[in-house]
Length: 330
Image: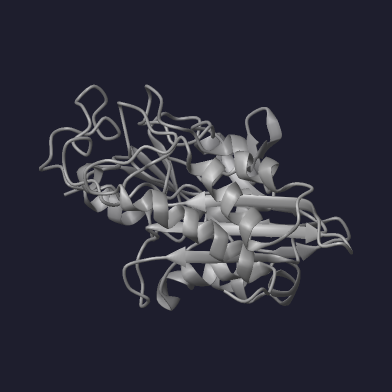
């Protein structure tokens, strides 16, 4: 049962930010992630601000950028002709992200804020969860940790970010635009989400009184040659065990001139595979090169009792994603 709360409907972005000045405020739009958290007692807002009617659902295609409004539905973004043509990896990630019913309700801004599906976070019966109750410990460290992190984790938390969209955004150098009391600011997607460190209860660098208004995707030569690969337990719908967003550009001699790689299901945030990218640049695009890059990226990975398999799976997924985006036989 939820605690008493106040409700307000924002008339515009500035009104939403003004209303959010009160501590304990939460924004509500599609609600596909927030409402289950609220029902489970994992969110307890004192005021809920309905932003569902704000004019933030447009998708604009310009010469140098694609702008996706924060209230654009995942289904609309996935089906947009320009996104399907110019950003195929993002379209694939959006289609893989949820059932059709959820995609018709969920928003891009809400998906950016999607919280972990760690068993220990979602079930209050488990007392140890530093994300839910800072200082209580991490039950997953010695518990059942099959879906948990192998990169960037800390002794405080080994939860993973569950979003497919976020992984594709990380590979495509997206920028998140937010509105706050001091005006608008831009947050590169690499800086939007956080690694757990000693504060795993803080998922993002978004401030409590800031509103996500849009996601900008700059026009880049490699974006049109992008692909999203999702490894999951069942094809009907499941969160990623490991996923890879890959984008690549080659020259006439089959040398890699630009590459972006991001991994999902392996870290507290979308994991930009910078070591692999550095390994790939200037090399011939072939299976041997891809394997070497995968080995380099996962060299520092750490598995646990039930997720050690993820390390090898992540390596193979990197190779497969790059092979697919290049149109090479597997």
